[in-house]
Image (cartoon, rainbow, N blue to C red):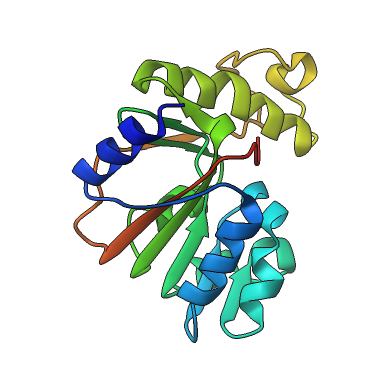
Length: 195
């Protein structure tokens, strides 16, 4: 990962960038940066691995459907925290979603969005990032969710299936920070996190 190239590309596209060597350092920073607001979480293993929900819940009103909260409340929060399925060094953020709540909240709703991204999700360019999202992240997520799809069974690639349990129903590419948002921050972490 060429972190300097990635940082410049993201900034050129209107994103704020914060860089950390470890998930613990990133969590400490986010715990201080996000205070006294409502915080929504998208389905995000990276945020779970960072321990963000319990930390931020101590001084914010947090919503996460993984904790039994409403997806609607999460998407209407002041701050939304999620990750990406892939991030291109050229600055494109790519997410695939089955329900639409996670990608929807990155397009409209919250005032601020934080993308927490481990180094394993970074690809050299848009085509490689799209390939990663479809053929690495999606099969692993289908397996994690115990879906009956060809990608979950074989674990090797996307089969563009028509299974009723398909989790790949929507693809969102952020080429630039949408104008509706006051701020979008990409938190780059030099550790492998999420899928």
